[in-house]
Image (cartoon, rainbow, N blue to C red):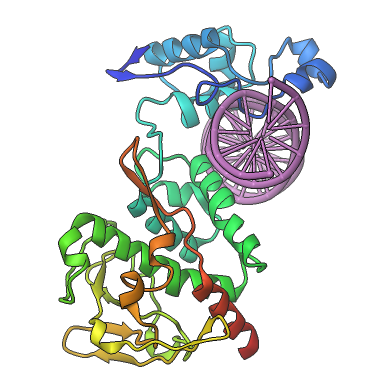
Length: 311
DNA sequence: AATTGGTACAACCGCACCCCC
DNA sequence: GGGGGGTGCGGTTGTACCAAT
């Protein structure tokens, strides 16, 4: 189906009869008021989608309850609104969330918490529902794997000081593959958004044990991370009992305003940048998108352990 | 081939807020 | 001021899909 020049797949979610699957509810727990009102629940049908799209195309959106009635849809106004905003709206972007979007989500969530709609405003075409789902399925999953609360300071620190810089690094590497393997500093601008830089003043919030070894994070303008690859000259390796010993050398370059946090004792030569580097992202060959599938590695676990010990 | 466990996500719910009468 | 309808938001749930066993 073409709508406003955009192809719309009218189905109930990724070509499957997915969604919440309230068929059960339809069969077993039909509410009395629904019977009275003759209301439908559960996955939307092609016909319903078509009706809703057609009606909005001719009459516009809003006043959802009356819209539902006038369109002849046996749905609540809320249901129509949700279906339109999250699925049928022509500017809804679907598909994998890009690395840039992932970084932006992490950053914005660190600032605003579960303000999904507010976060969604900064990701054009993405819905709050989609972002919320991303957070729950990806981020919370990793928190669970690390056996820590997603709202804990430990997890937030790990995210801020490990995951986000890694994402920035991956974005830089993707944008500039040759520079990623060189020792010279490079800069990547991720996305222009009118929000403030997420990183706190590193002078008073960098744990001594912070195991980041490869990044300089710089505030450029608003949300522009610049990720600078560190020189491999800084590294030596020291593995003890399956865990790493870290040392940190935090500094701030006054002239460039760069936070240079990270000089670990990990030898990067054995695995490109750091021990977890090869593991935390994969390339979706089909869609040619990068997906930070498993950002966590032994560093993260050690990082959390250190945080726990420190508390 | 069948089963199982994990993942993704559409769609629901309850609640709070806003606005109009 | 307050009552009611409309709207928006965050949390939750159920199930199709998929990979591993």
